[in-house]
Image (cartoon, rainbow, N blue to C red):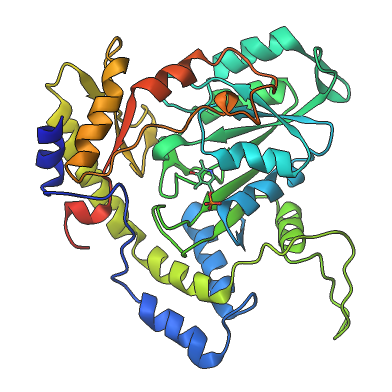
Amino acid sequence: MLAAVRHATGAEKAALHEPEFAGREWDYVKECIDTGWVSSVGKMVDRFEAMLAEFTGAARAVATANGTAALHIAVVLAGAGPGDEVIVPSLTFIATANAVSYAGAVPHFADVAADTIGLDAAKLDAHLSDVARVGPSGCVNRITGRPIKAAIVMHAFGHPADLDALGEVCARHKLVLIEDAAESLGSYYRGKHTGALARVGTLSFNGNKIVTTGGGGAVLTNDPALGARAKHLTTTARISAGWNFVHDEIGYNYRLPNLNAALGCAQLERIDSFLTRKRTLAERYRAAFASMTGATFVAEPPGTKSNYWLNNIMLAAGRESEQAAVLAALNGAGFGARPAWTPMHMLKMYRDCPRADVSVAEDVFRRLVSLPSSAALAGPG
Ligand SMILES: *Cc1c(COP(=O)(O)O)cnc(C)c1O
């Protein structure tokens, strides 16, 4: 295992994922400081939002303080609130479930598919047919009596989930589909950018993501009215009234500072270089693990193009007990390696939430190992 990772990375040691600032980051940040526009208003925010909309093909991108804030707003925009349930894959980063909680709703955990590591559409369909009924006012959980308003699909590690099948299942059960595309900037499902395919999607620009603003996120939508509402809600719901402070509802201070947006503009200018090198690295990992019997490289699902944000291997069935030793050996030798997130239904604050059979999520948790994935491992950009 260690030999394969050394071979693929061509390095003696490597972090799991490191940011790279080799473009105009300094120039743009300096411009903010020189002009005094460092905070929540400024032309870098507008420029970053325009660049994001263009890159993803979304009609509107609204920059936010982080990806979790963007997800919170996405849940609100989907119409879910106190007393509602929202379908969340059990295998995801904590932000997906927390965002549902922030909106006052309850996460209802569903399983992932072994091939995409994203929500399993067929299994979700069977589960909803089992526990929910669809009436004129929407989908209701027959067991809890609560409305199920939406489903969040998360494109895990950059690999797009099966959006067509999920869209169809959601339409039939009257659920709003939300894409958590925090990990999939630069990933495409049947030629279309992830995060811009559902009614609302979100991105993250945390330090470990494919491009970073230090901390940041964005809401994506193709519905101009929803985009305007996202901007309003994330900017304290202030209405234009000259110099007076007038707010027409309880909004949020989820604005991305201009300083952070400056970093984002410079990073996005180089995304093609990041993506190209990440595919090169993924190809090296694929080749390095091709002949190994104990583990397989997790490749992009058919019909999709992954950004290969994190490269992963899946230990062979029956080898779950070796996961701890593999992680210890890699980290001990200086290679950042991690298991997948602890499934949400196994965490104490979420263990009593409604859930489907989540056996694949548990299986992936026991068998997956994420490997060093910085673009720089495939050379300078
Ligand atoms: C990174 C990430 C987020 C957002 O995280 P922030 O740190 O708040 O930007 C949300 N969902 C997933 C799956 C993520 O990986």
